[in-house]
Image (tube, rainbow, N blue to C red; front, top):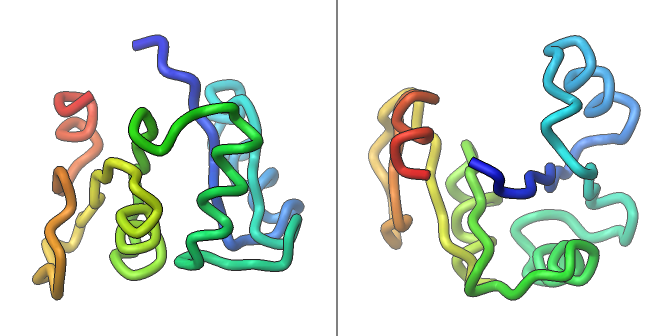
Length: 112
């Protein structure tokens, strides 16, 4: 749909790059933004703020699709981002409600 896509991960550069390449999806993403670039991991708000600086976006216009409620969703919510919780196992949401919840990739596509 023309949205610029980035990866925000607590993972390591070599592993994340290999996953994207082997999945044949690396060309969809403009950049990997990794926690080890600044030594801070999700859900720390500072990593989310760092990502916004890198991409030149405002929190209010940024959406994360995350599969880890604590690290991805709560972290993004605390940073003012919109959220889609990719809850493929349909787990009980333990706290604050994300903006959207999806259990399949096709649901995410419909939300976007």
